[in-house]
Image (cartoon, rainbow, N blue to C red):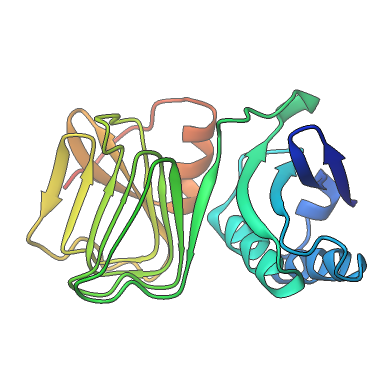
Length: 216
């Protein structure tokens, strides 16, 4: 079920587990249709998406962000997760950049950041929180720029010029031959890569991930 609620803190789009179980493209279309059913009543309001189950795969984050862009003129303020019916953390916000980050361009965020596109060679992206690039990451990417090494960098295709998480850095080499999405985490002071399906769920439950042979 997808509901729109007005709260003392503004508008919330509530997405339950049944809606999340859909394919990302089907979820995107369902959110578009729900937003369009308001007949433009929401106008340029700020909107927070409240997801009633986690963790969120970045493909779901991207689908939700695209849906708001397609289905309304709302300003997407963030995506928060309420696990086990608990209230979501109001500070757990996410910023979004729609489009590619070109050479010479810098996009930064004081929270988590989602790039709905590619980060091209010479482009720079930086976030205090986690960093998600739905396309190819071939530029410079930094997460946890306040020094937090528990943060994560996700990319649909991981081939950056440089990665930095907190004060841990890796650069100057081809990072991966994997055709699928990957995540970069800090393990034992080094940046390590994992398939996204392997890294996101253990991290969401705060369980350590065995670096094995993944360290760069």
